[in-house]
Image (cartoon, rainbow, N blue to C red; front, top):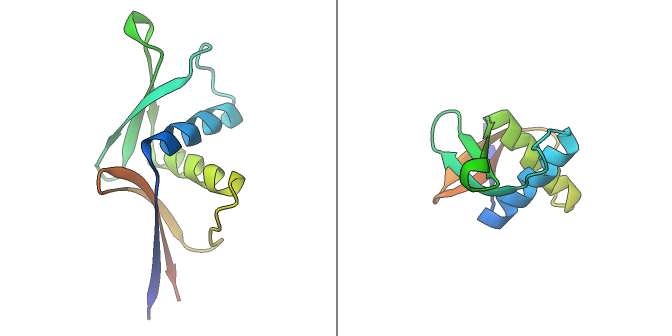
Length: 106
C-alpha cells in the first residue's frame, strides 16, 4: 500500500517563534525571560534545549519530541499551513534543521 510523506522544515527563526508561542499558550513560567536560542539533538526521539536569557541568569528549558510536535502544530495552525488530520506526525532533523514529518498510509 502506498504511503504519503510530507516534511515541513523550519528555519531557526521559525523554531524560536513556534517555541515562544507554545510556551506562552502552555502558560509555562520562564521568570520573565524569552527564548533566545535553541539547540536540537539528533537522537531518537529528537529533543531540544531552549536557552532563555544570558550570562549567569541563563535558563534552560528541556523540550521532548511531544513538546516540539505540539509547538510546530500550533505554529502551522496559527499560520493556516494546511496539515492532514490523520497521519503520523513526528519531529526530525533534516539537513541540520528541525522539521515536522507527516506520514499517511493511503
